[in-house]
Image 1 (cartoon, helix red, strand yellow):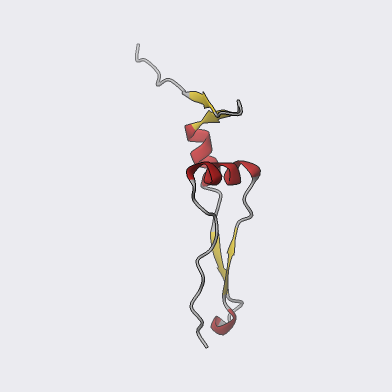
Image 2 (cartoon, helix red, strand yellow):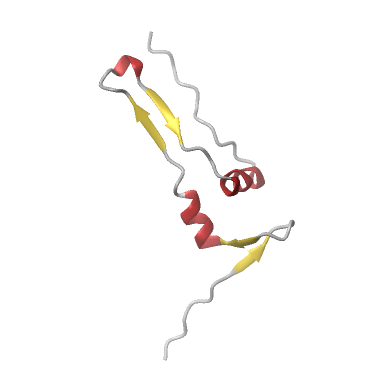
Length: 74
């Protein structure tokens, strides 16, 4: 009989449970979308609003969750 991989759940310093695979699937829901409404001059990017879990994760690793500044096309 083949042994099943062990699920590892850790805890943060505040006692919250952290399961790596679940966290990675959750972080994968953050997306950047380009909206242009068929007019390239008015195109802009939208970033998914982070959940509390997203924001806490990015805060812990010291990575800002923001869009880079776009160069002006005018």
